[in-house]
Length: 164
Image 1 (tube, rainbow, N blue to C red):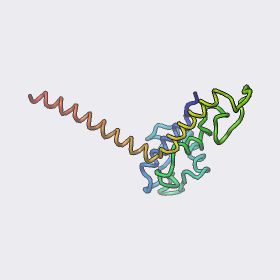
Image 2: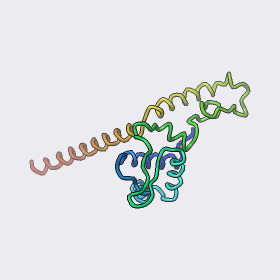
Image 3: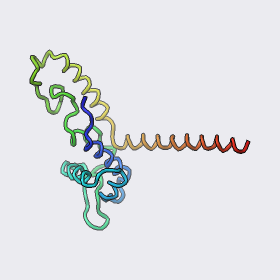
Image 4: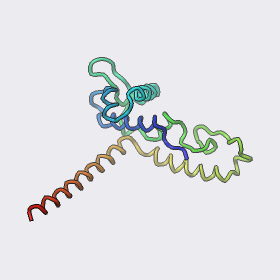
């Protein structure tokens, strides 16, 4: 099965970080690279590609950097993945945007594998095309809060042991 490229993984991480500061000051590549543990040169290439496709914008000079070109609630993961990695389908014959008959296929209309891979592609697209950068950030913020509460609860339990 196809997995997300490093480029897409890094791109998504950078976009999540930009989502968190949307509406504020642009982020410098150097700070974004350091905070998200992304090689700076690689991040420059990714952001340039996303800028060319209109997903991010940059500002030069003092107070410059990168920012999202539109609200994070309008940017889906499916859009980002397609921009960087191309079609979501694991096989070209199952793709909506880049259909191509497989070389070894006898008849694409009756290919058993294509039928299943279409279902996989459709299910994947249904999730990714309905999940925004904003959605992921909200989920992660909630998960971090639960993690802090669990840590706090463990600490409180340990602290009570010392006082009993």
